[in-house]
Amino acid sequence: LRARWGLPTSKEKRDQLADLNHAMDAAIVAACGHNTVHYLNTMLPREGWSHQPEQGGYTNLVTGEFLSTQEFVKRDDINKLFPPPWEHFRKELLARLHPDPALQLEHIGGYDKERAKAAHPVRVSRAPLRRGLGQAHEARIRSHNEQNNFIPLGKTATKTDLKELDKDNIKRIVGYYDPRTDKRDPRNITMIDAIEKRLEKHANDGKRAFADTNPFYKPCKANGFDADIERKEGVPEDAPKAPRIRSVNLIDKNIKSDSCIPVRDGLAKNGDMLRVDIFTDGKKFYAVPLYVADAAKPEELPNKAISQSKKGWTEMTEGYRFIFSLHPNDFVRITLSETEVIEGYYNTIDIDNGRMALYPHDKKVDKHKIRCSFLNALSVEKFHVDMLGRLYPVKQETRQP
Image (tube, rainbow, N blue to C red; front, side, top):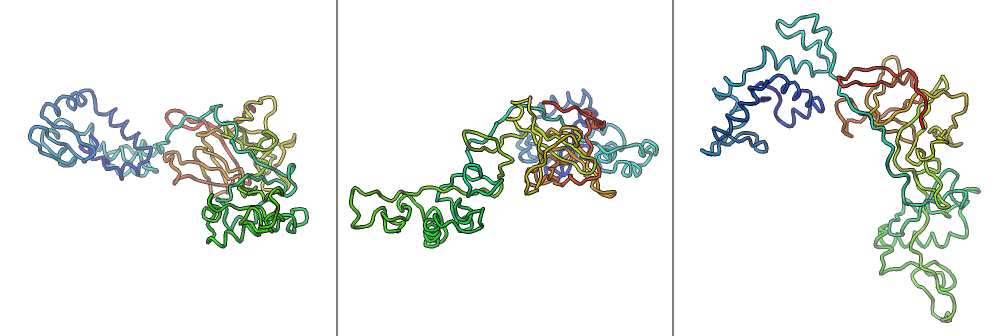
């Protein structure tokens, strides 16, 4: 029917419509009627025709004849059986799916001008994901400053296999320097320098440099400060051997302690983010992320907002007012300036910089994702979207556990 009525049939053209493609199909189904469905289900098989979508046409199983979709719909019997529902059906449907339908409808001959001016763009409606399940935290346990003074305040460190090292992260090995003095720690210089030399010797390839067949030992008196051997000649058999080093603690560039929760004397990165709570002080906006682990403790909701300040995240005290919560697929409109307004379905927020990620209403794919910093926006508005895509502003919400 799409081909017979002159509507897009190729995957490329339908992809351009994105999710509005489903609206086009719904309009076709609504307009075709029961007789059309009956003919499609009975006449084509009776005459031996079988639809072959992967080949882009129809094959006659009796004669072996193949016709492309465009050729097939030009047959006289198809033309007679499946006329367009009404005059200008194709033009009107494509105009309605256009970002500016009013302008497109004005060019259709005989179309009522007042109806054309009243036409609004079609908005895809999505159901918000207000779930409460997911992973509470990552399995990997991290170290932090309260456990080790050589980890900078606010940072975390993870145990990392030597095979994963390269020259770019040598300086991130815990103990490379003392953050309290900004100088290298003399207790670790020998070992870290030996790791760096081993990497240089193997073209900066950690897998080759620290292969199982090429063990790395801590430089010490037992091996004469030679990391390639376990014990130097002349050292008594009952004397301690140089310990083999398989991993080091590496400071993470991205995961900060503010985005983690205490687990087994360490920290673990928060698991799935359920929502983000938006606050304001009347001048700026603030975002407090809420994770699965927080939902398990409803009596004490998180109260720190994302911040890039070296002092850490901003605590929401009495001077900040809660506005609303955003779950995935909540519709939000952000006014950045008098001339720049961004709107779409909320996806997530970057806890490192506070940038919010939105999907356009009709394109829920990552390559079309919109990212913007809303903390200094003029306004941030949330809307309920009904099944027909109509927007209803949310004035005020009560913060839920």
